[in-house]
Image (cartoon, rainbow, N blue to C red; front, top):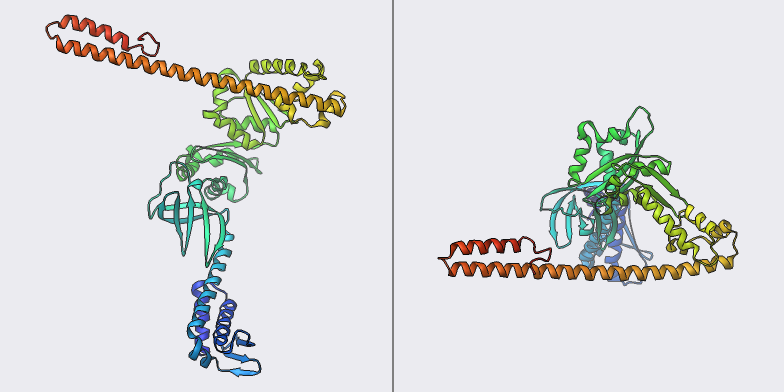
Length: 452
């Protein structure tokens, strides 16, 4: 390995592997030292230096000058090769670490290599990344050679290679897709202020504009939904709600609960709770399927949102005042003040700030402790009563289901008996038809219990 070969090796690795030249020079020097120590011993004071300009190699063992070609040629060619390969791999890994570290929370495109069990392997150039099942959109299935877009969430060294973890479930993926598809967002005219997402089902975005002439919601949707359509397609038809951001929590909560119409928003700042009043016909829309709409709105606004009608609120206030008033040390005035601050249950009193309660009712710390202790006992009793009620409801549901199954079985048995009778008495068709009509009437109402 002469000076010219050294330069060619360094230039080639720098160009092909994107490894800094200094690291390659260092790897070759370390390889020569390791090879020489095979002959002179591990304790020998050996040093090799490569001229960075012309590739000349100078070696010493103590004060004695070494002929590197003789050293490598006689005893260390294989060792030198192994050290160089190891150093190059480490340098390549470090370069990839730097490259992918810079892409964390950024969208990256790759090709599905394989899907095995709960992990999908994605090829990203010379690196293989993984997309765990927990980071996949529910219902998606990937086939080899499928193109896929995801965000990088984690990069770490794993031996001489790196491990890159991808995600398609994070809210940042939606944000990056909007930045790519909506020029106003990329230019900074429109900002995404908050995102709440349940992957594969629904996402809520709160957006705002620094230009009053630009409609932030309309710009994101596009004419007839043309802009947002490509994002929805990328997310496997996930529903996306875009709402206007507002710093006022009352307005923001109204916007976040769209498409439901809100009558009133009551903020209970001490509890971080917002009581939202809606009309009866808007209740299910505000809550959403399985509570999805209110849950996402709560995440978007960072408020604990409770949806109820005016009538439900009045009943809850009445129960809370009555419940608080039976606590020793709490009179009706204090109970009303607690309710006015948003405390509506014994559970709420368990987490109340002592200083706040002291100031609210002009109480001592001992009185506050006594009230909180009573509330804890009452909350535990209420929880036990609630559990018992749920248990009884489950048992009743099981009994009703068993009765329904027995009724169905009886009806089926009766129908089978009539068919057997009809088949064995072909000459009595008129009678069989009459009996069949009677059998049909039994089968029609098995759930009511009449068939039993």
